[in-house]
Length: 122
Picture 1 (tube, rainbow, N blue to C red):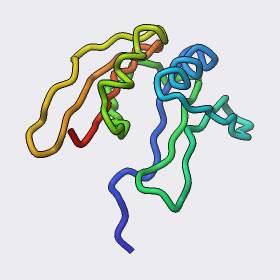
Picture 2 (picture 1 turned 180 degrees about the vertical axis):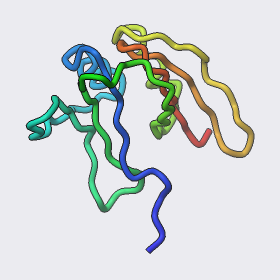
Picture 3 (picture 1 turned 90 degrees about the vertical axis):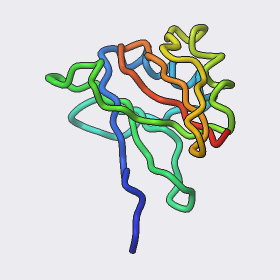
Picture 4 (picture 1 turned 60 degrees about the horizontal axis):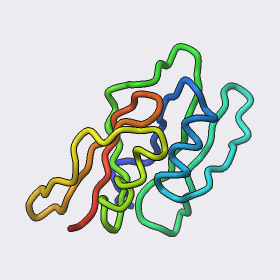
């Protein structure tokens, strides 16, 4: 069975409560605490019958926030989510930019220093 290249993502954070508030505000979703005995983890809403992959915020000793891993979140129009970033405590690093036939992207920095991308078809 062919699969999408990304099967899961983890965004490492220093302050799990602050990061959870940021992602919930920007994407207007509710993250769910995972039953992880080792480290605090909050998962993004996901379903196996939808396209894309699931992932979580993770507060793990030895895994510093602000990593160089790039995760792109799919959006109908990435400018909509970008407009909520500053109020949620983050920063828009690169405003909406066309990437040719592949749509548009916005680069943002979350409250933990992680650089993430927003992608939309237009």
